Length: 242
Image (tube, rainbow, N blue to C red; front, side, top):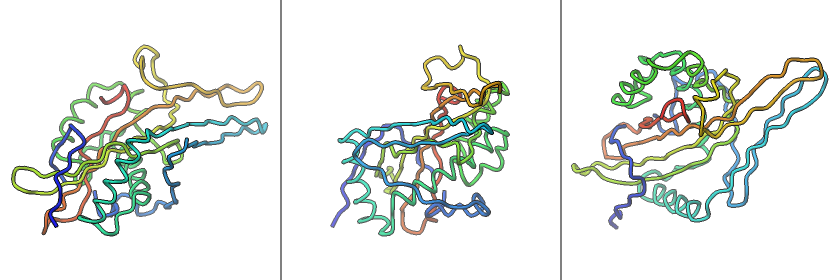
C-alpha cells in the first residue's frame, strides 16, 4: 500500500538526533523520568518551591490542547508507526525531547557551537552563532534550562513529507514552557508570555522568576539506508532567539 503524501507544517528544512533519542553523548549520566501522557482534557503541570520557613509558592501552568490539533497529531502518530517506525511512542519521544532541549539550551547559553554538531542541523548552527553573538549576557543565561525548570511540554506541528529526490522525512515540533531567574530588562521582553513569581519567606529577599517559551523542531530521515537519527532543525526561545 502506498504511503499518502502528508504535509502539515509550512516551515521545512531537509536535514537530519538519535532513534529515540539515542542521545548517548547527551544524557549519559542523567536520570530518565517518565512523562505524563498528553490528554484532551485540560492539563495542569506544577512545581513547588519552599523556603526554610516552609512558606510555599506553587507555579501552575495550564495547557488546554486544541481538539482538532490533538486529533490530527494522533493520526500522524498512527501513520508514523504504520509506515516508518513500529516502535514509535510519543511519550518516550517527548521525554527524549525534554532532555535534548535542556542539553542543547545549556550549550547555546555557553556558546559551545562545536558541541552542537550532530545534534543540530549544520545550517541552523551557523544562524545561531550570528544570533547569539549579539545577545547580552542576561539573555544568554535565560537560554539555559535545567530539566526541573521545564514546567510544561507539548507536541505541536507534525509533518510527513518527501523532497524532490524521494527522500522521506518526519518532523515534530515540540513546545516548552520553562522558568528562569535570569535578570531580563522589561522592555526587551515585551509581548513574551512571561510572569514573575516571588519565592521567599518574611524578611527574605524575593526571587523573581519568569515563565518563557521555546520551540524546538526535531526531524528524522526515514529513507532506506540512512542512519536513524533525529536532528534539531528549528530553535526559537520567546523574545531571545526568534
